[in-house]
Image (cartoon, rainbow, N blue to C red; front, side, top):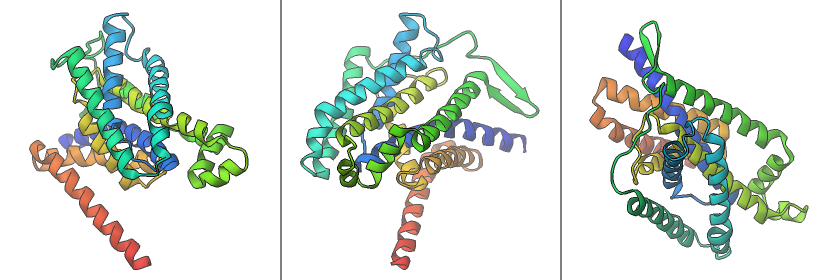
Length: 287
């Protein structure tokens, strides 16, 4: 029972990162109807940016979160304006697919050239601090990171639900032509949305640095899991992405506990395929 409770807590804490990645992917897909296949590489860029801020400027990883968010937002806005917007005009999914995949390869190989293939990590004064609650032990950095993720999730939901810009984003996601007719500048909303999605990925990367190694291909597995979160949680649904990320984290830890850690990825992707088949069956029956 103690091991089960510990696995539940670990899965919950890790699932928060999957949720944040999935929400960033979900916003981009919900508005522009494109799958950002370089989303994991954006997380990796956020990790290296946090690493530089800590090692060069001595900024604590948690204090660096706003800086990482702003820099990653600007990076996403530039990529959207210069690369993705022209490709959207072609209305070709293939062009966007190869563009985002190629951009991901460019970022990962660029990090390999600049930083090398060495594994790096950040160790602060509280990195090895643990909190004991009965049979459950939680690392303080993981707990703080999860708290930050919850706050960001709530803030994102409030932003999209109640602010004017958030309502414009929702309007564009529902009908871009209608939104443009009533005066919403759709291209600016696209830039804002992509920048916001990239910023969320960068924040997730920055929060991961204290208990996850930093290397050029670190974002690959998180990128695939973000796609799973988007599909399982529902396309365009922020609460659905949050719950799906938590479910994915729990599924990983439980499979590692009861079966084997080496089979956790296999079980995750098998479950993903089963959910896809089950959902398609339900859609076919409704039709």
